[in-house]
Image (cartoon, helix red, strand yellow):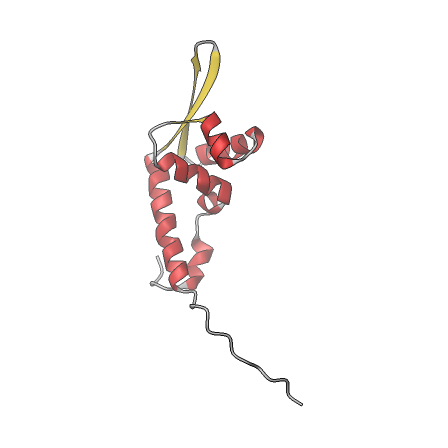
Length: 116
Protein backbone atom coordinates (compact mmCIF):
# COMPACT_ATOMS: atom_id res chain seq x y z
CA UNK A 1 0.00 0.00 0.00
CA UNK A 2 1.25 3.48 -0.83
CA UNK A 3 1.63 6.48 1.43
CA UNK A 4 -1.51 8.51 2.23
CA UNK A 5 -2.29 10.90 -0.59
CA UNK A 6 -0.48 8.89 -3.27
CA UNK A 7 -2.62 9.42 -6.34
CA UNK A 8 -0.71 6.69 -8.21
CA UNK A 9 -2.64 4.25 -6.00
CA UNK A 10 -5.44 4.59 -8.58
CA UNK A 11 -3.49 2.17 -10.77
CA UNK A 12 -3.64 -0.46 -8.01
CA UNK A 13 -7.43 -0.36 -7.61
CA UNK A 14 -8.94 -3.82 -7.95
CA UNK A 15 -10.57 -3.72 -11.38
CA UNK A 16 -12.92 -6.55 -10.46
CA UNK A 17 -14.38 -4.36 -7.68
CA UNK A 18 -13.87 -0.96 -9.36
CA UNK A 19 -16.32 -1.52 -12.23
CA UNK A 20 -19.45 0.45 -11.21
CA UNK A 21 -22.01 -2.36 -11.64
CA UNK A 22 -19.88 -4.83 -9.68
CA UNK A 23 -19.16 -2.26 -6.98
CA UNK A 24 -22.90 -1.68 -6.63
CA UNK A 25 -23.54 -5.44 -6.37
CA UNK A 26 -20.90 -5.82 -3.66
CA UNK A 27 -22.20 -2.76 -1.80
CA UNK A 28 -25.76 -4.13 -1.74
CA UNK A 29 -24.59 -7.61 -0.73
CA UNK A 30 -22.38 -6.24 2.05
CA UNK A 31 -25.47 -5.04 3.91
CA UNK A 32 -27.41 -8.31 3.86
CA UNK A 33 -27.02 -12.04 4.46
CA UNK A 34 -28.76 -13.06 1.23
CA UNK A 35 -30.13 -10.99 -1.63
CA UNK A 36 -32.52 -12.28 -4.27
CA UNK A 37 -31.58 -11.80 -7.92
CA UNK A 38 -34.85 -9.95 -8.63
CA UNK A 39 -34.20 -7.44 -5.86
CA UNK A 40 -30.67 -6.82 -7.12
CA UNK A 41 -32.00 -6.41 -10.65
CA UNK A 42 -34.51 -3.85 -9.41
CA UNK A 43 -32.11 -1.74 -7.32
CA UNK A 44 -29.27 -1.86 -9.84
CA UNK A 45 -31.30 -1.07 -12.95
CA UNK A 46 -29.23 -3.66 -14.84
CA UNK A 47 -30.79 -6.06 -17.32
CA UNK A 48 -30.97 -9.73 -16.36
CA UNK A 49 -28.19 -10.58 -18.80
CA UNK A 50 -25.90 -7.76 -17.70
CA UNK A 51 -26.46 -8.53 -14.02
CA UNK A 52 -25.83 -12.22 -14.63
CA UNK A 53 -22.57 -11.42 -16.46
CA UNK A 54 -21.27 -9.28 -13.59
CA UNK A 55 -22.37 -11.90 -11.06
CA UNK A 56 -20.40 -14.55 -12.95
CA UNK A 57 -17.25 -12.42 -12.85
CA UNK A 58 -17.61 -11.77 -9.12
CA UNK A 59 -18.33 -15.44 -8.46
CA UNK A 60 -15.30 -16.53 -10.52
CA UNK A 61 -13.20 -14.10 -8.48
CA UNK A 62 -14.45 -15.65 -5.25
CA UNK A 63 -16.10 -12.42 -4.09
CA UNK A 64 -19.69 -13.66 -4.08
CA UNK A 65 -21.52 -16.95 -3.78
CA UNK A 66 -24.56 -17.69 -5.94
CA UNK A 67 -27.15 -20.08 -4.50
CA UNK A 68 -29.77 -21.59 -6.79
CA UNK A 69 -32.83 -23.33 -5.42
CA UNK A 70 -36.58 -23.44 -5.88
CA UNK A 71 -39.40 -21.64 -4.12
CA UNK A 72 -42.25 -23.97 -4.81
CA UNK A 73 -41.86 -24.70 -8.51
CA UNK A 74 -40.15 -21.42 -9.34
CA UNK A 75 -36.37 -21.08 -9.57
CA UNK A 76 -34.78 -18.83 -6.97
CA UNK A 77 -31.33 -17.28 -7.27
CA UNK A 78 -29.81 -15.73 -4.16
CA UNK A 79 -26.44 -14.11 -3.72
CA UNK A 80 -24.21 -13.43 -0.76
CA UNK A 81 -20.85 -11.76 -0.35
CA UNK A 82 -18.00 -14.04 0.72
CA UNK A 83 -15.36 -13.23 3.35
CA UNK A 84 -12.95 -12.63 0.44
CA UNK A 85 -15.52 -10.24 -1.06
CA UNK A 86 -15.77 -8.32 2.22
CA UNK A 87 -11.97 -8.05 2.36
CA UNK A 88 -11.79 -6.91 -1.28
CA UNK A 89 -14.45 -4.25 -0.66
CA UNK A 90 -12.70 -3.00 2.50
CA UNK A 91 -9.37 -2.88 0.67
CA UNK A 92 -10.99 -0.99 -2.21
CA UNK A 93 -12.37 1.60 0.21
CA UNK A 94 -8.89 2.12 1.72
CA UNK A 95 -7.28 2.44 -1.69
CA UNK A 96 -9.92 4.88 -2.90
CA UNK A 97 -9.48 7.00 0.24
CA UNK A 98 -5.74 7.14 -0.47
CA UNK A 99 -6.39 8.23 -4.05
CA UNK A 100 -8.85 10.91 -2.94
CA UNK A 101 -6.33 12.32 -0.45
CA UNK A 102 -3.90 12.78 -3.35
CA UNK A 103 -6.29 14.86 -5.44
CA UNK A 104 -5.77 18.55 -4.68
CA UNK A 105 -8.78 20.60 -3.64
CA UNK A 106 -10.07 22.83 -6.41
CA UNK A 107 -8.46 26.25 -6.36
CA UNK A 108 -10.46 29.44 -6.60
CA UNK A 109 -10.74 30.61 -10.19
CA UNK A 110 -8.33 33.33 -11.15
CA UNK A 111 -8.80 36.08 -13.69
CA UNK A 112 -6.59 35.81 -16.66
CA UNK A 113 -5.95 38.60 -19.07
CA UNK A 114 -5.33 38.15 -22.67
CA UNK A 115 -1.90 39.39 -23.55
CA UNK A 116 -1.92 42.13 -26.13
